[in-house]
Image (cartoon, rainbow, N blue to C red; front, side, top):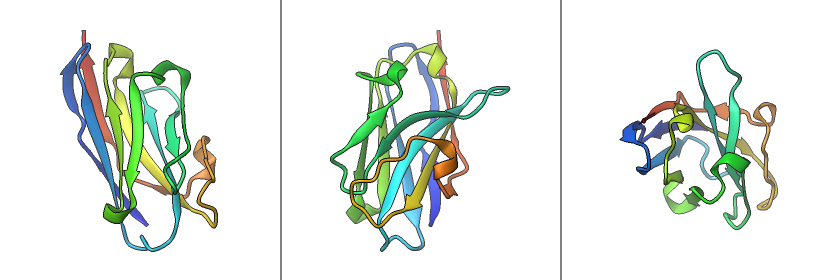
Length: 126
């Protein structure tokens, strides 16, 4: 499956953005999906993940209560609603996917994913 993230941009501290990740290709398969982010000079970091069924999610502690991951399988699209943004949220955000036989698998580590989008830059000004 091919992934394309969009929705990044420049926002002030406390503002909001919604990222989208559109999947194309073998979208008839079931996919577990997630968001990661990377700051230059640092390792890519897990942000959030969601099962195929959409009823189970997980987040890194620093974004809990501020970010919300969701998906619309009919549109083959995953979202990341980011509220109360902070300067430390500044990063390139990547979406990732992996085919799964289960509707309830959740993956939170980078090396478990097989498909990656090119990333979208989020900049939060102080």
